[in-house]
Amino acid sequence: MRRSISAGLLFALLLGCGPSFDFHGVWVGDRGYKPKTGEDPGLVGTVSQIHIEVHQDGTFSAVDSGIPIDGTASSQGATLHLRPTRILGRPAEMAGPPVSNERLLKLSTDGSADYWRGGDTVHIRMRRTTN
Image (cartoon, rainbow, N blue to C red; front, side):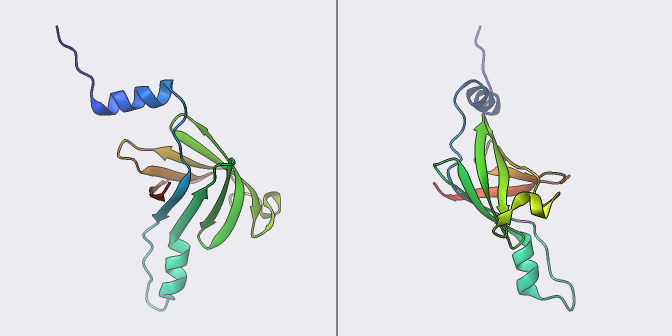
């Protein structure tokens, strides 16, 4: 009797049972905000964009909605936990929630990742531009 395993199930099994995925590199995403009448398109575009660089040393640098964020990064399987330590160059606790909340990158089967800021109910699709 032949058994087959779907590619998605095999992918999930490999990530769940093996070492964590290598998230290092640059990830970008866009919330898709569009300027309304009278709004500055450049400002709306900046607020819409997310840029995250995950470093080999377990840290990350990001610009989320135009706000620079630095912190620690640790992965567990197909999920990367991003914990802000500095926001706008100051200690993260000075910003308070939700800006200082942990963020997550969860790998998808197509190689992209879903991004959540702590407290968000929607995710943003991210794609890696460099390793």
